[in-house]
Length: 354
View 1 (tube, rainbow, N blue to C red):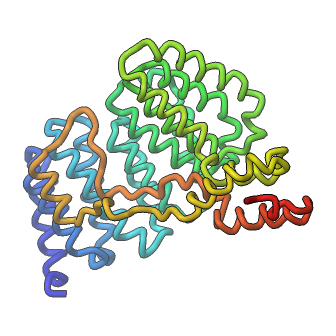
View 2 (view 1 turned 180 degrees about the horizontal axis):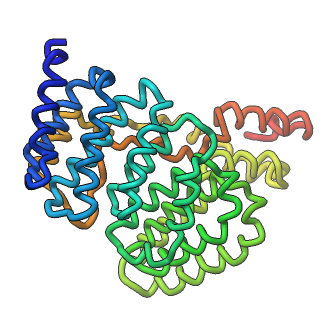
């Protein structure tokens, strides 16, 4: 409340300096903008249009001739913070941001650009892709775009947002997406990102859309595994593949194996398997080691660690993330319902368990 009367005059003065055509990219001033946006939060809503315009002017300048990576990064952080502040209160404004940001973004695709595009796509309340996003998607599947290793994580993040937002639309691009996956998998530097792309693809795209390609997909995974076993850091690939192929197998797969197959008729096997299921049901997620940094701590990190030209994620670009078990609902309830169903179908099913 104390800052509110000064937000507009402060930002007007700072942008008046930064937007001078001959003024250099001053990362201290853009950090000041970021700090004000963080503190002001939703107080910037009345001047959001002006802020977007000023940031777009700077963005066009940076896209044409970037000279200070730290400035560029803080500029995108400021954009992400503004989007988060404004679009959380009024999701319909994502269309406004999209209309203003796409023209300069289309001049150049760099990692920060894709992360902001993913943020806008996630926050847009519409279930349909806009024309701008539809036109951009084929460009993201261009093989040459994936040759620049530093931008791969950001483009994967953007493709994940596409898959989550419009899985039905993505059905027509399954071959293209899997082609990108194969390209990333063939390089040891990007194979982790290959699995980061494959997991949301398997979750969100209907199975019928890629079922004919599954044999070839498994063949590619196995052939790569065979070649990686003799190379350096082979365990990384093995872990990623196991995690990807086993996302749903820990509790749900084990329960259905017991109740819906011949295993449910083998009392000796049941004696061994049910204690394992019981332990899985008793496990509680340990969040004690989860670290959530405050906005002040993030700013300190930006000042102390600086900018990594290879790839630096945007701290303020929120992401919905991938819920790999969204279709399951309550795992405990599903387990008990499966056991109950099997008990009614098979006499003495539960009684046979020691």
